[in-house]
Image 1 (cartoon, helix red, strand yellow):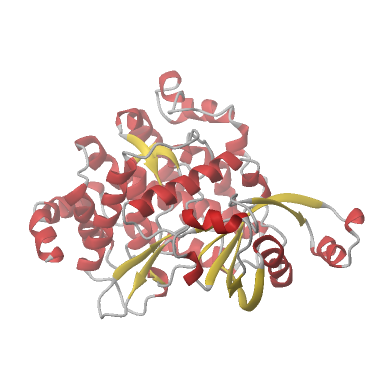
Image 2 (cartoon, helix red, strand yellow):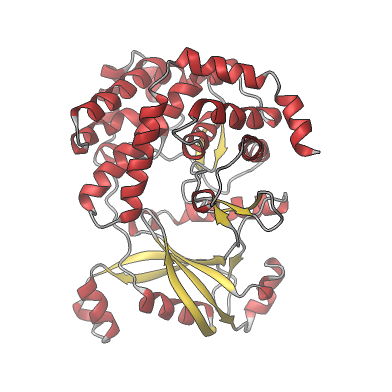
Length: 421
């Protein structure tokens, strides 16, 4: 069972204890995802791009960070043949790109190929409207942009595959796609701290994204209920046991309680639409060539869904603001968003608690993931980053933070004029 458009609110409107019963019925959320990252190394990835996309020469290939999938940077020359020449009309200027990203989706998400089509449609929709999204490339000799690939489930199976003993190995099916590599630095890798002006402009960019998505018509339903939906935060209570330290556990339980009593009963009052759902410091790219930051890339649409616009903003604020100055910096970020896509009074009142919920969500999931994959440095860093931010956000009251936001927000139109001249 999955709750479409938060159906459980009409059945269990009275907060945490009732929500527990509703969530317990959705065991797929409580138990977490069944997937593991595809077992693909550099050699296997190179074989895939040569076979699926007619690469004549590969000069460089390396793995990129990913939480649950496998992504590989590929530099090389791609041969165009047959029907692909016709298909190239739909992928303008793609022959100019010598840099690509091979994306291999985990086997669990690969079962939902319709959602991949929605991702592709969203990227195409946004590119038409001037957003810097990747290009998609068709398979060799065709027009389809994705392929189901049989992937070994262990390193032993992978060795077997390379020795052509496929019948003795175990496999899983994963979707593979090739997209253009967008140059730029992530906010995480920037050498300098983002200024208030930078944060305002990022907020404005995301506000424009929310505004554009109002006109997006997905080819499939984007209603999906899993642990990465903020509305399902309380379902993660089972992850609390994976947290180290009683102080940290109490901090998380306080956020869970506040969300269940203050946010959940009011979610039905929030505006709904298509959201990217993962606008973090790793999924926006920046160009620094001219001495000032310019957004050069919007990537990773794997979590796209139909949900609350407020969750889009909260996810971005939680990621982009630093723990040493969360309140003023977040105020400029929110002011930029509201300059083009104003919040409703209900959304503004709930924003602080939803930001804390997002911080708590990521901390819980990464804590559990670290126990499963102790050697994943990306997960370790993400966990500690969100824990420190959660502590910083919890150091001041909701009213104090909102007072700072209101003061900055009163000047958002002047800031908009000053920062866009």
